[in-house]
Length: 219
Image (cartoon, rainbow, N blue to C red):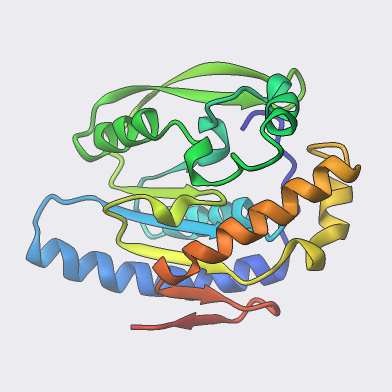
């Protein structure tokens, strides 16, 4: 997202280093078995958990290893644009909050364009204007995609699924510092619904980042 605020700390960098080691091993093994196939990492967790910070840190480490990486932020793919989302959620009594809020068709199309090294038109939210712009990107030569977002690990065909085990209650300070959305009663209701939805998808991950940012691999 344009104008996003990243609060990258040592904990993000250290967790990214551990994940990068796993990615490099898995990527090499995958390429031996499926030559030419591109690798996808998905990073999920609740708002304020540090998904974008971890994704950015991981991308920089992999770049140093000679891997061309792009990050795809699923927050850009909401069906309802930011300026209308508050009213829409209240209209539906917050029951629509969950993975179905994403435009999956557009998201999957962009992932397919990554796999085939094509040019792609992608949504990009400008946080300052709260408007959705269209970004043109070329996936030619990009061989690793990092997808980050609340429900990123629900994406089909990912190779490494990471879940950050921090809840919105534990990251209230980050919520206030980042100030992406107003922190009123509406926002806390949204965070609670997102918490419930994200927990249901946790089982899809095979890599976990604990509350103190230790990395655990499950297979």
